[in-house]
Length: 416
Image 1 (spheres, one colour):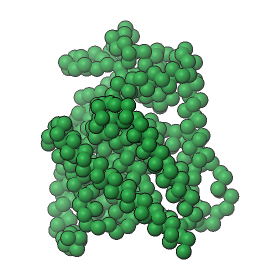
Image 2 (cartoon, rainbow, N blue to C red):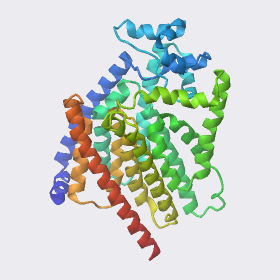
Image 3 (cartoon, rainbow, N blue to C red):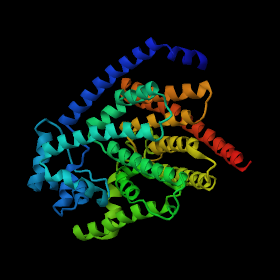
């Protein structure tokens, strides 16, 4: 089967037809995503950032949503939605140190800020494609890379991500920028430049600091930097958020603990409303948090063990394999709507790192198509989410088991 597909893909006419079809689909999806974003962008959280800038506690307004309309700038923001017969309310589920990152957009009026956010997300999209080409997917041939990037844009998750004004494009761009910065550090070290092992990369710290915005995705992904032994940058970037949280407590005239507890209370109300994640699967049960902690502990152990073996023995192959494991688990261990699943495209790195059996490739294709397109066909009904969730979990477990085997193989090859 693999040979047949390779021969078929080797026919130029087949490739061009495939690329043309995907280009048309991606263009339609992109246009619709922009139109939806111009109409709504309801997840942008301009209101929460604006309230913060006005020294008004956005978390208290999330608990008492009617009170937000007592403030003219916020009332005007909600009026844009009410004029269209839509309901919008404060939902500040971000930590204050993260809301601060949106402050520049609050200097614009709500409608102008919405368009600025659309343009920003389009720039982040271009940046993601650029950085994937220079990091995890650089081994893909040109046409294969184009197919996967077009698939990403054509898929429902990306279109909805753009349309609702979510923040995953923003965070994932800065995560990949951090990966690129780290890879340049590795390249310099391999070229014999000495004295860099104890130097902190300021660029990497800044990128990590910003990428935590969508922490439900990027905190698990940042285990990649544990594997890369970038502990100073991890600690400093996290410490910057601690400092800003302390500042926020003073700014909002509240306690440091409340600056952590309040956003968690707001976000916990959404625990059962995800797509394929454990919280949605277990209907918000506390068991989901226990399982998430256990999985994170397992991924951390994997990162540490892989790091211990990475003294020149593992190389770029394990980079792609490990990031694929992190991507797949990060989307299901905590709350995620399916609009975050466009990052699944990165799992192509798993197949570029080592040759995989045909059934493995078929599993990825089925999982990708199911999440990107079939869920939308069935309007994400409970039955479709259960069925596609089963496919996703099985594929994730299979990738993880294979990655553990690859890790052992790399270790034995390096020691021989």
